[in-house]
Length: 436
Ligand SMILES: Cc1cc2nc3c(=O)[nH]c(=O)nc-3n(C[C@H](O)[C@H](O)[C@H](O)COP(=O)(O)OP(=O)(O)OC[C@H]3O[C@@H](n4cnc5c(N)ncnc54)[C@H](O)[C@@H]3O)c2cc1C
Picture 1 (spheres, rainbow, N blue to C red):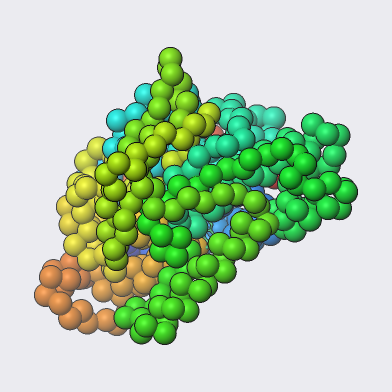
Picture 2 (tube, protein in one colour):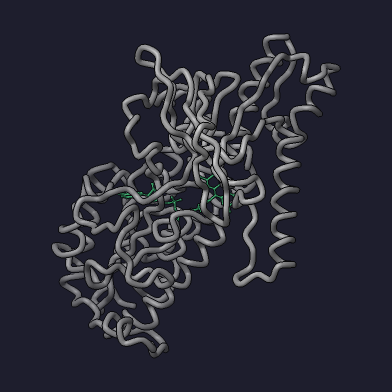
């Protein structure tokens, strides 16, 4: 395509798995793509959420994201946050883009106790996202964020796969410290891979001799309800039984390797506070029927601990101008990520699903982006069925060359603002030499 042809220009907010997949598909369809990324590096949950023991997987995903973002027709704009450096109104109305894709993930921890005790964050209450960020970056010389020391007996609220990772982080820290205090080795990667008992055994010590009581997970429903494995849609009783068995197996292996404790059927009522610090958590036991967990009157109890970690899920961040319904942005079609509040805005990956995994984010992004290119941007095939969707599908005329040039100029200015001069040079400039 010649630079003076009319062209579609699409902004993608967030450059990680979903954003980079969307950018690649669009660029392959001749669309010019502007990727706005709030951080210096674009890897999102892969770098800051997936715990750093996933050494190979993280490296592989970085490479994949790099390959997509350095494609011709993709303009990467780092350190540029939607809602701060560029407003929603500017992006969706002022810029005159062909479409906007939100691929900004789910970075706000769901508020623990409705957020009522958030004043205690850093004073014995910690949320999952900053905790994993710290765990992944704490050994870098340039890390200057909050520091955490995980005491023995820490209590974690949660129940999903991510909370198992949080438990592992706690146990690796606590046992690591206990081993080092005895002059023994505590290699984090080996402890994660082989399990804590195996590393203790290699050094001739029984884990019990270390005097660690262990991290405790509190979960509101029954152990077998923990969403560690998902049943197929409309599962038969046999398929459901298989899922429950898979969950039990996963949990049993994780407990055997990392020695954490679980108390199920327990809800938090409040934090127990002494002075200005958390000293425990007030809980109540529950009776579980289906998905319903009902507090049992008279079963209230205070469990002492120095640290409470909330790992109850992540939701999209509030961005001024984006409509929300409860914890999520207002999408009229979740599958296709069609945003209700403005014409030509779509959501891909975690920002829509709220959770999920790398593959789910990738597939969701592919689906939405293909839908967008084939229908909305007047690309290849595709006739839409539903009338509501069709309204969105009216093919748009590509932008005239002078408009495309104006947008390129905007992007150049944003890139100059952060001294960005090309993808590979930028990535090597902003990657700490001691990044794990
Ligand atoms: C503890 C934990 C363990 C996990 N383990 C696994 C696992 O073992 N296997 C697996 O498959 N998946 C795992 N996942 C899930 C997986 O990491 C995510 O589903 C996936 O990476 C999400 O990709 P995404 O691109 O949709 O979102 P993200 O990776 O969150 O990307 C969003 C991007 O948008 C940027 N952004 C956010 N707001 C703005 C803004 N306002 N302006 C500009 N940019 C913005 C962010 O900086 C980020 O780069 C795990 C997640 C967690 C938290």
